Image 1 (cartoon, rainbow, N blue to C red):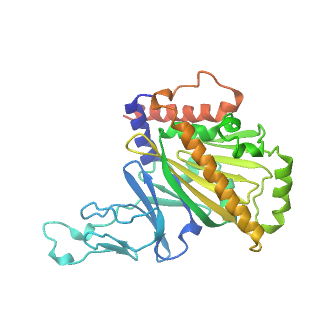
Image 2 (image 1 turned 30 degrees about the vertical axis):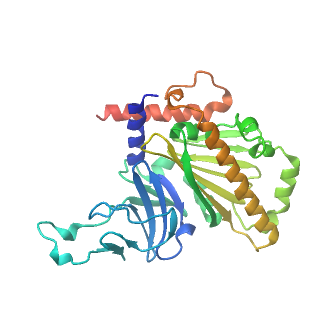
Image 3 (image 1 turned 120 degrees about the vertical axis):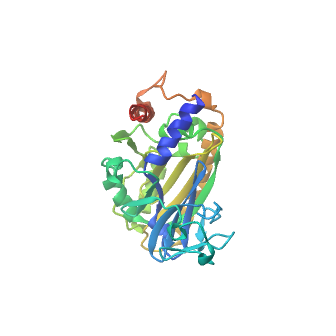
Length: 345
């Protein structure tokens, strides 16, 4: 893949599309924040005394990074000159001393923010509404979001591959027996069914391991959820987010964001759904699930690092099977986006 084409596509996807970045349960209290890297930008979603605000993590004064870490609790105060955003207002020390400028127009660089149920989306320069982009997937996401209770784990690191390679790896299941033979392969996922809504896609499949099925069914009484599919679900929320779950007891939200150096900034949040009561059994289940997810993502990162950027193409797969339909639609979406970009000048 030519680097300039990939860079052009990345810029369009970053600026024009809505990005699923968080769940409201991660930002319950004042000054809670989530920060994700997206190319040269850092997206922050912040609880400003009960109001959620999204912004590019740069102080408007001298361009200093304001918040550090991937998540936590902190005021929006620049460590350089103490410019502070609070209660919807940017507070500037010694404001009267600024000359030859309209200091009253200074503000943090806010992003558009919208919601699908309890899921939080942000966009730099929206060309369409969030509802249009989700293209019918919003009903499923709304129900799922209402079942989520809290975040139990946050993991982030770089994939040593371009982001389309990392995403396409997550869109197909043929590699599972070889790459994930000691982790995901144990579920014995079946062929399942694929669905497409706009540029988004989903895969629903059953678990072929009878022992695991029985164990998962046995703990169902511990949960208070409305969205249960007795199998494995995986959603691509175009362009960079994926959501996956087995039996709806927990959800993994993954982001595959481009970096400036041609790699992929990967992050994963593990969410528990609503449970009726805490128990040692549930604690063990969630710990085991987090560990398995960690192993799966490390295996994904390792195999993706063996795919050089020039091996990926925006063109149709040269050799494809029926189960590659999600990859085919994914590349088709990219071709359409680039075509529309050229037509619009």
